[in-house]
Image (tube, rainbow, N blue to C red):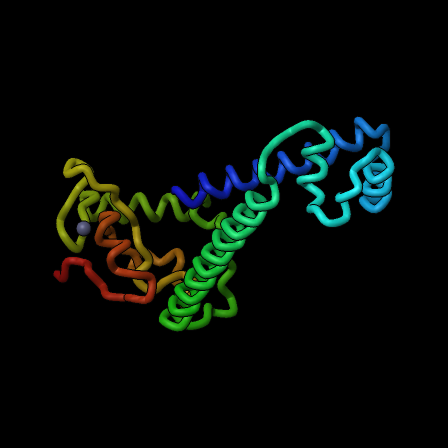
Length: 197
Ligand SMILES: [Zn+2]
């Protein structure tokens, strides 16, 4: 949280610098397309002989009659932004590793498997899902919880669809699980939790 706020304020700092640059150009009466070298020459001509030795920001600030150590703040802001970027890229790398671990566990999908996301909206699936719920009184077949216990009830494919797309609409391949049991189970686990007759 803190990092996000810091990055935001640091980005704001670079906006301040951009405005400083634009304000200088505006008071010199030149457009944004004029090069920095030309702007520097114009400042030199207007009596800023040390402009070449100073940083652009400090010369600009002085020319506009403003105070503030822009250079030190700019360095600090750059450092913090780079740090936040590094942390973000490390986080995304970890996410990628987790995804690869997951892929290793579940293996590659069946060639016939199409992850179109529309499956769960089809009438066939909804009818079959209803049958599975009716047959089990919508009770988790692993822990026995129902919606009355405040849990969400899922209808789970025992053999996952990406492994056995042919069993997508097979009632025998369905089991009713509460959300906790289903998420705890993990997609690579194909344990059949149905109550054995
Ligand atoms: Zn359960």
